[in-house]
Amino acid sequence: MEILLFILYPLALFRPRFILTALLLHACLIGFSAWQYGRIPLVGLHDTLGFLAFSVGLVYLVTGWKRRRDLFTYIAIPLILALLIGSVLSPAVAGPLPPVLRIIWFELHVILSFVSYALFAAAAIHGILYLAKKEPAAEANQYLLILVGYILFSVAMIFGGIWAHLAWGTYWLWTPKELWTTIVWFAYSLYLHARLVQNWSGPRVAWMGIAGFVIVMFTYVGVGLLMKSSHEF
Image (cartoon, rainbow, N blue to C red):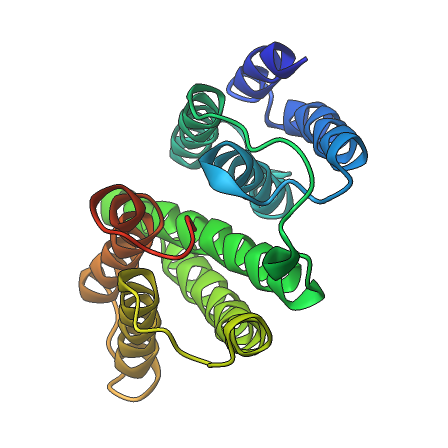
């Protein structure tokens, strides 16, 4: 069934509203996986890359539903497909979760993390749009997406601390993933400080938003591949 996603998502390149059909199928696949394994599929690169692709699609649906074919579509849809390819090529984690992961705070932590990642991805795309076309709306959209993503990401970090405390008896483990997650938070804090306090605008903040997403992807994929950590997202 996953192969159908590689047919439906590209159709949005020709008609953006096809994204709705792709997302409905994607949601069904996530739901089926949850029913099959008795858990939300949020463990390992197979699950999380697929969920991130779905989240990017949802953000695209909200922000790009009325858009015609443009640079936003031509970047967002290939990004979704790249994430799906990574998901398909990664081994799936089958079966129930270990007790340490069967905690509601874990699921909330992961879901909010990836929704915020998707918002940061869309913000980076709007930054590219601004740099390419100097559209004031693109700069405003980047700011709004980062603001919402920052709030959700901050809440996700709090939930992650609660999960860590319940699972290991400490709110902080000093793993590379946690350190880089903090760097992500500071990167977007710096963006918001520059935007709201220093009144920066234009290409400087657009590049900051793009750089923030690069840090996000390194934290998500790069740290897990290059450094030992307690989780893969």
